[in-house]
Length: 148
Figure 1 (tube, rainbow, N blue to C red):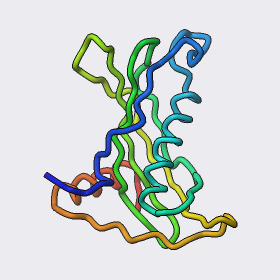
Figure 2 (tube, rainbow, N blue to C red):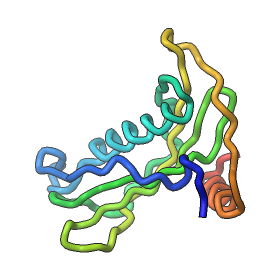
Figure 3 (tube, rainbow, N blue to C red):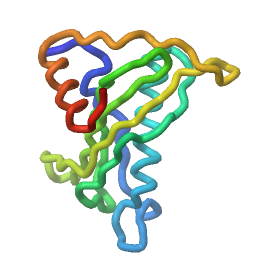
Figure 4 (cartoon, rainbow, N blue to C red):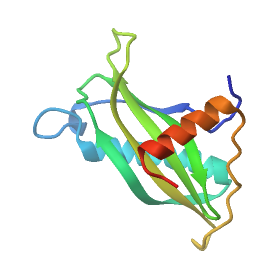
């Protein structure tokens, strides 16, 4: 068990609504990415204790479809920091309200930079891994996504 506030954080729940669908009647990938970016951005801002901006998405994978009425959420872990940036891994799940089992519909790695009011880079705290469980999880994600 861990007390790390930036390890496997479940947040950003949203309900898929008809206006979020693409022409194939499934959740539009851009809608999913927008929610993901906003959710992780709030977590990055909390970690850095400052404003943040998205630097990029190292990876963003769509694995399964999501449909109207499903609840989508993000389980996110801070996996690396540099002087100014934070790299987060997220696993994206969806579930119907009448089912307790979630399915993984995607995952990704997003990078954020901490900035001041003038949008100049700020120093971020170094990532501290609290135990072997976290270390193993983080090292596996780094290996999976080829992050040094």
